[in-house]
Length: 130
Image (spheres, rainbow, N blue to C red):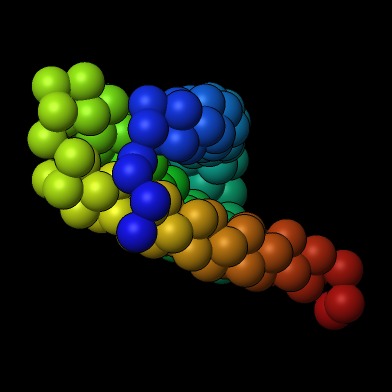
């Protein structure tokens, strides 16, 4: 196995930072949608609005978990760089591997969240079919 250098976790550090920014933007748009849907539901307690709220709760949970795993991956990237810096090569390789696994989980949750979001749009359009 080749020696891990400071450059390798730096690439992941950059990628995870951008991913977290995208997750944060998604979360902010959901926050606005929560407010809108709540107001709409308080005026008209339709089953479609209720279904959208249930779907949105699931999306918020997924987004929170995406952010947690992404942030943990970023934290472990920083830890990896520190461990390389102080000369603990073997431990840095293990920590970097865990960071990669956490990033994979975060991205997997992102795909799952996209599938749930698509279901939300199907719910929204379902009243047009009637």
